[in-house]
Structure formats: C-alpha cells, structure tokens
Length: 243
Image 1 (cartoon, rainbow, N blue to C red):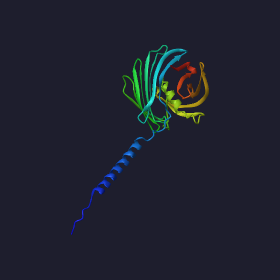
Image 2: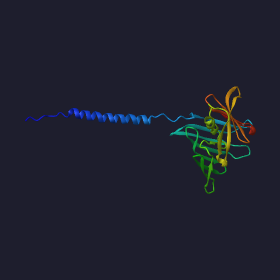
Image 3: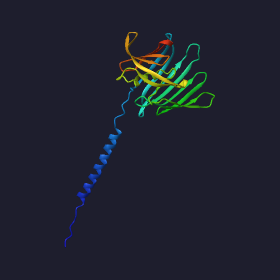
Image 4: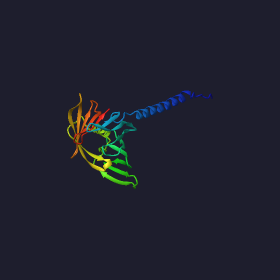
C-alpha cells in the first residue's frame, strides 16, 4: 500500500498569514487609540510680558506663559513689583488646569521681607491648601466651593485674568458667575463675568470683559483671539499693559 504524502507548506503559510493579520490589526488598533483626538480645550498657547502701572507710573513687570502640559494646561508667571512706600517683592504662581478650565493644582511663592508660599490641590469642588509661612509650621485648610470650575485670582498675578477670559463662555455671553479663590489671602468668594462690549485704549479697539465682586470691578481688554492685552482696575488706578 502506497503512503500518501501531505504537503504542509500551504497550511503553514496560511497560519503565518493569519497570525500576521491579527498582529497587524492589533497594532493598528493600538495606534488609533494612541492617536485619539485630544480633549477639546478652552485654552490657546500664549506667552508675553505685562507692565504694571499705578497712577500711570510703572511699578513692576510680569512674565507669563500658558501652554499644554500632559493632558491638561499649565499657566504660570513671575511678577517683580515695587509698590510705593513698600519693599520690592517677587511673586510666582503656577496653575495646572484641565482642558475645560477647572483647576487641578496651584502653587505660589512670595519673596519680600519673608518668603511665604502654598500648595493647593483641587478635587470635586474642594481646595486642599497647605500654607507655608517663613518661620512657622505648615498650616492646612480645606475650602469647599460646590463646583470644580473655580477661578483662581491671586494678588499681583494678572495672567490669571487671561485664564479667566478663556474660561468665560463666549458662545453664551451674558453674565456668568463663578466661585473664586484668592490664595494669598485664603479668601473664597464669587465673581461675575460679563461682556463689556467694545473697549478702546489709545487708538485700538478691544473686546471687553467686566469682572466684578461685591466691592471691586476689573476691566479686561482682549484682542480678536481673546488674548489679554490690557487690564484696568479703575477704583485703584491700576493698569496692566502687554508689552
């Protein structure tokens, strides 16, 4: 009886092709997952320098940058300021944000006669604050705001108003309210932000935003891309102008 010979080459070839097909499919799927579109963000990259004026005279400067960082955004600045009848101070602030503008963390330091600072973590509408004052033990405090979308507006760090101008919903316009935290004063509160129409400064026109608390009004002058170009606090005779 003659033995039949079975040619295994076609079967091996078929198996190899099947394995390659599966591997290729998995690789493409992984690449598509890695290349998934980023979460839409209210922010745009920006970098610049502001001159801080009091009664028309320069009292300081602030250098700032807003840029992507990981899956979120990082907004930071350094201000050097010498107020009248006061010592010179350097203030830094670093604000990490989600793409929709909700804060993730915030760090600030102030260097004048003493060096003070704080680290703040935000989660579910709660700010966990660790305050470090020179020659003192760290102080911890939690503040609840009831909303994850909190405006951080700290003293002498005006780039944070550039962040606020992005968080404002321009498609809805009107008056919009937000909880606010002033970290250097450990002060919570609320603000309203509304369109101020067209504002003029010098020979240029800008889109205006009015930011108000119960006792303070700030006017923001924005270009057509909603970048902060000028800020005024009329009651304090303060102007912050982009160089």
